[in-house]
Length: 182
Image 1 (cartoon, rainbow, N blue to C red):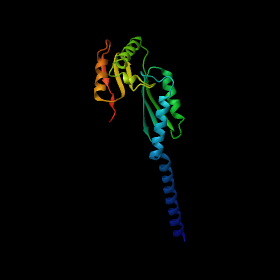
Image 2: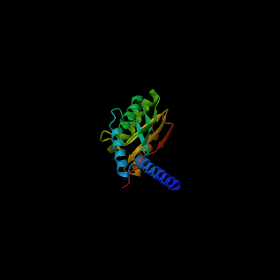
Image 3: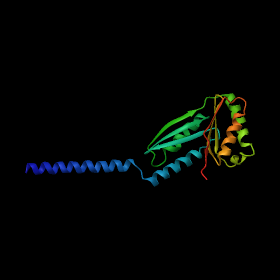
Image 4: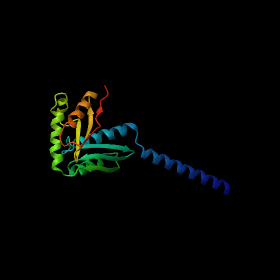
């Protein structure tokens, strides 16, 4: 009798462990449609931030229910606004903030305006000036420029890089523009 009870108790323990594992893993991994919905909602919330402009770059990565916010901004309040906007979305349990706030610099402020004009006033690239959210992000820090975003063709990517390289006060250019697949 003692052996039968021990076997039943061991069997019950195994069932409890299996049910716990199924519950834990089922809760930790949202299904693909839910993950896509959360990502779309996060992207929407970031684009709707009131001070998010052409000189800011916000990106994110997803690892389960943890979102890591990346990029750089020129206003410190945008960094906290981004975290607050994302952490209230259903399905996001944790937000890691790795957004760099650019140091205040009058030289970089002047450079940003010159870069903006060089890109968005150029006839080949002025189509990207339409709309509220500009697809080419201009990041300037201590005279070093990074272009982020999406353009329609390799020619547009190259034109933006050439335009930026011609601005006085630019020490280096990193052209991270992605070409939209046709």
